[in-house]
Image (cartoon, rainbow, N blue to C red):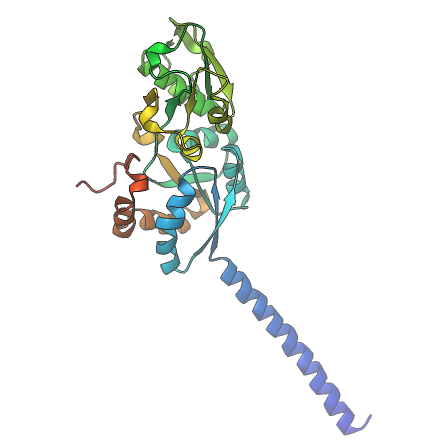
Length: 279
């Protein structure tokens, strides 16, 4: 092989080496860029809009992009977060996530709560709780946390009495000790209750599903007094509590977010968190 051929071959080898290195650098850069895309788990309701209109702009200024991942129930978003399929979710309250962590042993954690629309009791047949007839069928969420929550609201409204318990999150239909109207509580998927109001006397509908179904809160038979533990939270994997979790906490508690929500009439009926600035 002459010198010219050897030189050409050497250039070809070097070109291949640098080409491979460049490809490796491109992939690394692409991976770094994609790490700024936050996949957000949501269910039907107002919280996707809250993120899109009021949180996305703040995160964009910090270099993050948002991609929404829609789920149809409360269980999947937490499983997806735990497995790394999404980076955060906003669809559940504090009591619910605590129950999921305890019962499912998920490695996730809430980092901040947001303005929340409470659970409402709705009916297409009756205008007042007093009108509910004896033996009326009442739809309540089937998941353990929201079922217990609904029974607690029913008790606070005088519909039933429950057996005293150290853990109110575990109340069940079997714990009803007094039911003057002999109401029949029917556990249903939370998303189905608003769609079933034509076939039941009334239904306990969580805020996000009531919002998605355009139910009128001014016509509700009863509305939950939203306590701090029932306000919806943003959750991340527990390993990201001090990184992504802090970014989200700071974004939500910022003056920009507060002013943005206060200027949006859509969220006027949402109960503010305890950290919300006092007027």
